Length: 183
Image 1: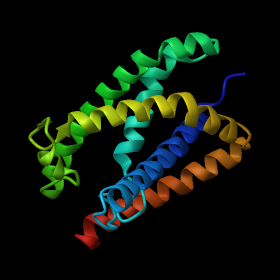
Image 2: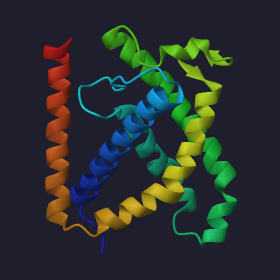
Image 3: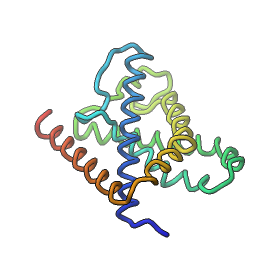
């Protein structure tokens, strides 16, 4: 039986939020422990999430996941190089677009340190990060998403919808707080 549009939308809100939080954790761990730069909120909003990771993950789900969904495991594994390249390209385009959008609204973007990377474009995108995002896309589609779908699939429709509304409210409140109060 087809899921209602409302419930499917709710699931995507949950996925968006979880991947945004995972992206924030990834950024903080990378900056704090790998690079040793110390802790800072790596998001552009107040909360512990980087929405650009949520956007990228949803684009992976909408565009790349259909290539491997429903296939037997050995056939899915054959697609890893294609999935890697597609995710790398999608994430790079999202990051480039995100840098322009953030620069327009805030005057800068959080990853301006890319200008220090050997291969970069205007400090907005860099080859090494694009490769990491390609690897991340493979991990998302082959490991995280199947697990998340099982967890969210076990939730009642009403729980999915309520969770999605609460997450949307928190996210909207954070945007308002960031724009009008935090500056």
